[in-house]
Image (cartoon, helix red, strand yellow):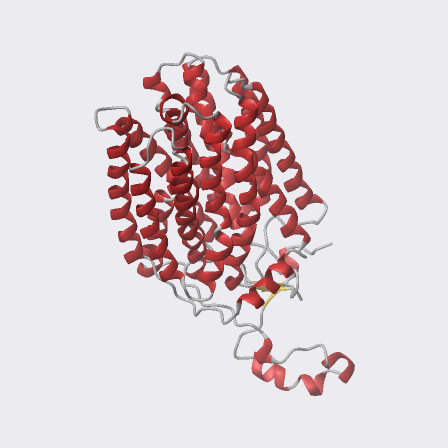
Length: 465
């Protein structure tokens, strides 16, 4: 059983370490001395400012990137509704869902490569390339033809998804270069940009697509808007720490080590289930509202209401996460998501849509925003953060690939809502069990994250005595 944080001593002052290490041969017996590492082999704790102009400029840039990337994914419900009712009427709901599923899958799975690229010093390159690809794919969507599913799948599902994945994980991971004690709070604020984008993009797209501007020019306006934002973000963001000198082979070995960390594996499994089921309201709430007779003028704002509420859920829990512990907050949040998904079966009017949108937005936002701090807490040092988040999101991305099409197939062309609701709700309850297992069986300290190998918490700077 781990001792309480108060029973540990802080690391010796750096000035005393050399003298202490020089005398270790005199103090310790040879049998014990062989297990004491040389001073050079002890990794230096990175100097992280936790603020300053450069740090907050990077945070602002990351906010913009998440607004344009993940925020655009959260607006897919607008496209889903438009494709099902007007643009791709010759195709099933499940087929159309593959577009959104592939997009979300690429967002998460690309993190495996973009997180590694950030760690080895290619942050600037991948950020710019992803930004340009993002705008290019929106332009390709704008010239797609009605009933041509493959054109939208390639441009929006794969191309746009790859572009979003290329910039999303580095935007979160780079914050660890600039923030330590405030990391959970800053990550939560930056993650809330996904909700803000999920408010702005649906309103803009609905008003452009369903008015005289039309679908094609509406998407082009969206492309120009995001191009301007992403160029500003590229200027604002910067790295501080030197890149890791590791080959791809070493990175693969590091991933193998991550997968031997039981708590990390269970957290990854829970994240997989979270991603598999949590996008049901985001993708289908607008269509559900219209199908149950809610006016289109109100239904068009349902996704924006959900994402606006999600902004609250993404910021408020992270204020307390550093004190109460990430798992203390993420477990009840996932449980609430499951309850609210089942409650969607009772939605028949504006009031029901409004309640579900607000409450689900809050609790799902809390789940998503706490994933970054949760995964970062498993890192042995700051250079692992990008890789650990990227690997977990890459595996969990499979859930976003299979989840929406399964829910679309269960929904059928007759819009039988109970079947996908049960599937999504069960995923939510099961993922809650995974997170509870992580807390109880493996005794995760809810307040301090201890390195599983060295006993040193790089997050707090405390060393086991």
